[in-house]
Image (cartoon, rainbow, N blue to C red):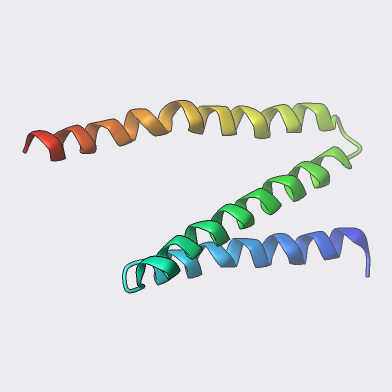
Length: 94
C-alpha cells in the first residue's frame, strides 16, 4: 500500500468523524458533549497536518499550494469572529 493511499484513507476517516461528532452533540450529556469537541479538534489537527504533508510532496510548486491552504485558514480565522458577533449581539439585545 502506498503512502498516498494510506494518507487518503486517513483523511477520509477524519472527514467522516466531523458529522459524527456534530450529530452526537444535541442529545448527549455534558461529558460526551465535551468529548465530541475533543474528537473534532483532533480530527481537524490530523487532517490539517496530512493535507500539508500531501501538498508538500507535490512536484509542481508545492509552496504555492501550501500558501493557498494557509491563506484559507487565515481567512477563516479573520472572518469567523465577524460572522459569530452578529448573531450573538442580536441574542443579547433581543
